[in-house]
Amino acid sequence: MTNWKVILSIAKTHLLTKIKQTTIASLGVTFGIGSYITLVCFMTGLNTMLDDLILNQTPHIHIYNEIEPSKKQPASFLDLENTFNVVHSIKPKLSQKKIHNALPIINYLNNDINVKGAIPEIKTQIFYIAGSIEIGGNLTGVNILDEAKLFNLQNYIIEGSPEDLNNNDNGILLGAGIARKMSLSVGERIQISTIKGDVFPLKIVGLYQSGIADIDAVQSFANLKTVQRILGEAENYVTDINVKLYDLELAPALSKKIEQQFNLKAIDIKTANAQFETGTTIRNLITYAVSITLLIVAGFGIYNILNMLIYEKMNDIAILKATGFSGKDVQLIFMSQAMIIGFVGGVLGLLLGFGLASLIETIPFKTESLPTIETYPVNINPMFFVIGFSFAMISTFMAGYFPSKKAKKIDPVDIIRGQ
Image (cartoon, rainbow, N blue to C red):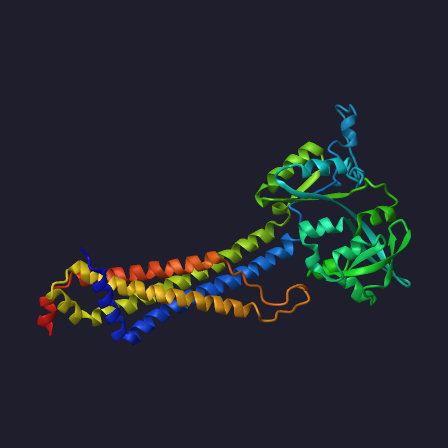
């Protein structure tokens, strides 16, 4: 029967008598795991921030009326056999922007168990008027509180709040780029003109900044009822429906079902952002590849240190075997040393990684393209710490197993003769 008390006592003595080598071995684990934790927390934090720039502002399914060529051209309706037809300049079929029966469709989608929320929008082109200057832009009518709840619109409001717009029927959430061009600020009034030439004064209740300059130079938001009034349309006038799902992966299948069921164009987020998704995959691949490389390098360092430690203990191995310890006991002694080094180094590595990640999270990070980000983004995920500590224990186990297996087979007579 293995006497663990004696084995652990001998392992402890070996570690303390060679405190320099023990410290170096532990630091190898500490810095390997600490570097892994710091890197993976920082890189995944950055990736999440970049993903959110697109995903927060993009519906999982966007439903609207598409302008597209007629499936049947005029010549198709005529019986012109044995004739030569020439058709010039066939234009797309004129279709209304309004979604027919939009409100019943929204209610239907909101009752779907896979749908987190479906909300109406009105998109229209307008002109921002400053004296004799007219600047083209886009005005989107929304239910601002629903928009903030489902698509985190409040994260991109640098002045004012969603409630300010919700409480003002003549308010507008103005794009930051337009506000700079026209030297406007919150509380002032701006005149907008529809493409028909009707002019309406609106009060600026907040400034919107998406982080994408081209959007901020044209985009503004107003309440759904405000835009309906500006366009002279009824309360059921809706040009777009934005859908948020519980599971993003269901978007492609559900969008096809909506197209067939309602004869509308439905674009899922994966189709709309195919290039972005590819970039995200590559960034994540690089992050995890570098992280795994760090762990593997740390593992080799641990192996080399423990291997040298065992060679330095050849005399001790000979004495232990000569006094009655079996080869298995000798192996367990050195395996215990390796696991102790792994445990201590792993715990210190987790503390180091957490400390560095927390420090990075406090470093100021200011940029106009990311108005709501004040410090570097860090993703402190408990799973990274579990993976890091598990690797510390597994790598030190493997690093101690092979050298200790060699020590198990050493003949003490050969060592004594060598002396």
